[in-house]
Length: 114
Image 1 (cartoon, rainbow, N blue to C red):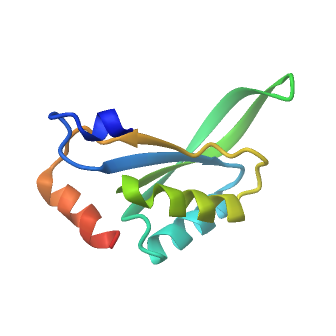
Image 2: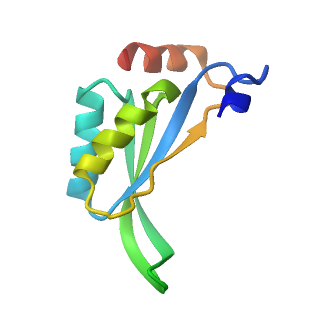
């Protein structure tokens, strides 16, 4: 991530973290905890259908995608919270850099994740 953060084209250390959950109640519980703890400014919840390989078998399952808007420096705390609450043995927890964005929106994320 250092090379991304140090790029002259990157405005900030803002990221979107993607997490899949088995069911809506689990996704909502994780989202509530992250927002209440000021680890995330916002969490979008989207129903998705996933096809993946797990333990040498192909699975197809309806899941919920959490789209977490936050700052990169909150990743470790967010990962810890998610792992403590998540039902999966190996949950998806990946951060994607926000290369650029509306400055008022990025400022709002900063205010909400202090």
